[in-house]
Image (tube, rainbow, N blue to C red; front, side):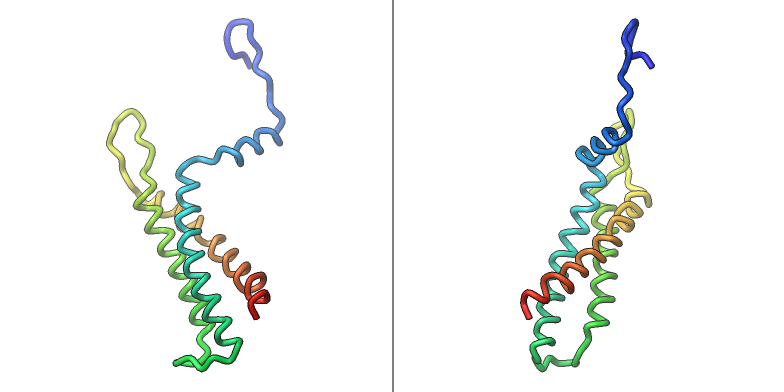
Length: 133
């Protein structure tokens, strides 16, 4: 490979290329992860308060609805992550200035929200809850 006349471009090792990718992620990916993470943290805090209250013996109306709360948490995080990413991540414009949003933006948010919802639930239930109970 040459970078110009008489100039050789150094081949980077795969680990260096991977490290550069992780240090400089594309803006749409950062926005998708950040939007899902904000929603998951807010809802995770609410779930944590509900779970700790039930564990301590609070008599809440409706009884123990933790399973429903987890299902709603996951559904809302995935739904909100999908919609918010669709709204804030436009497709690349190319040479024109017209920005479009397609299903790909929503798909990016959907697939970013799934592991974030899981990780926030694990941190809330396995790390933070034992500290508060």
